[in-house]
Length: 247
Image 1 (cartoon, rainbow, N blue to C red):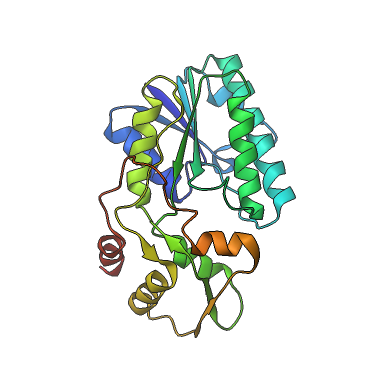
Image 2: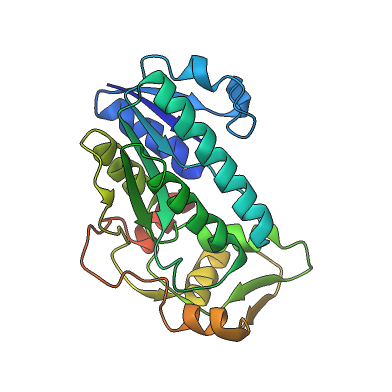
C-alpha cells in the first residue's frame, strides 16, 4: 500500500520510511525538501494522490506552548483535510507518553495535535512513544552555552527504528483511536544516559545536571513520562544503540 510519511526526513521519519519499504509498502515523503509544506498545505493534495494511509511524525523544536500549539494544530488540520479529499483511509499520529500528566510548553502542542486529529471525523490512530535514544544528545546539542545541560528525569528511551516499524504496522491496519503506548525495554535516569553518550562522543564541555522547577519538573523526575500500562516494548536498549553509534 501507498503510505505517506509527514516529516519523513527527520529522525523517526527516516526510520519509518525504511520500515515501510521493508514491509513492502510504497512510502511517500511529505517534507518541504520535496516540495510539500504541511503548514501552508502547498503540495499536499498532489502528494496524497493514491495514498491509503498517512503517518504524521512532524515536529517543531520549541518549549513555548503557543508556538507548539499553533504548529501542531495547523499541520494536523491540513493533513487531515487533504487526506479526506484524497480518500486517505487511515491517519496515524505519533505522540508522546505522559503528555497529559506534565504541563510543559511543547506537550501542550502534542495534546492539541491529538485532540485535533481525534475530533476531525477521520479514521485516526494515536501511538504514544517514549523519548528516543537520541534524546539526551538532542538536549545537549541544542544548548549553546559552554557546558551541557541535562535535567533530572526518569526515561524509558526507545530506538527510533522500533517506533518506525510500529507506526507502519499500525497504519496498515484499521484505525483504533488511542493505541497502547510503546516504550523502550528499560527505565533509566536521563543524566546517566547523557554521561554514557558523552564518553562515547568524547564531549569536552562540562555537564550540568539540573532539577527542573515546579510541578512539571517533579512529574518528570517521578516518572510521569513512563508508560503506566502494559504495551509493546522495543528490543534495542540504549546501550545497544550506543554501541552502534560508536562503530
